[in-house]
Image (cartoon, rainbow, N blue to C red; front, top):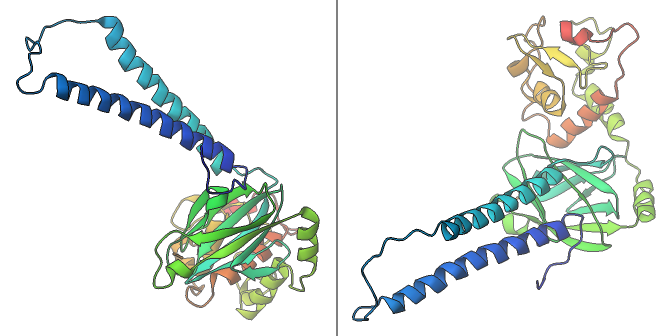
Length: 316
Ligand code: CUA
């Protein structure tokens, strides 16, 4: 097939191949239907001397083959696409996490060592990258046509997208969800560089690592006044909290994942930890999503304290 777009990620070729197959299959079916339609239009036109008796005859072989063959072809198409979809949704365990915050009208990116950039995303060639994305305001959609990847970026939620860049170069980054006046201008560039260049580029950074940025914010926003061990105020201990099980005041037990921690900061009273008074103020509208990401990095960096026992969070 003729391609006008570069194929620059691990998904480009498989997705293009599937698109071609769907085009050929659907095109063949449409062609068959139209050929028969036109043939009948001519054969049975008004005044033609075609036989119109409506003879009843059943040819089982024909009936079965024109039912079964398209059925199998389309079920095959379904199996193929669900397979590819699963691959698209399953990042490898070693994928490099990069955080993306969308806001009207820009893409803000933070790399694992804390380096930030706006409307540009540097990625290393041949390394799986997992983007963890959220929005500061409305729904946006992260779209890199040359990589054949697209994912909605939703306020109050983390969505993920992964790919491995397979070609050096710069590729357009677009927003593909109408998000207000400057939606069309919410563009950027994905720069695929060699691993060495990416490492060098990261090393130029003077930014604090995200966990350290998070600690500063933790003190600045007053979180440490209650949540630091030995603060004297009865607030949940955050050491070893990430990915542990938390018993909530209204009954259920949940896993303290990114979404849980995000909501615990922004809307603390929606999922209060059992045994604690609802005294934590909400930080929604006082703290932006990039700061929440830094706080999360800090909370994730807190190891379980020596006095804590395995599964202690679960009993709270
Ligand atoms: Cu952001 Cu459209």
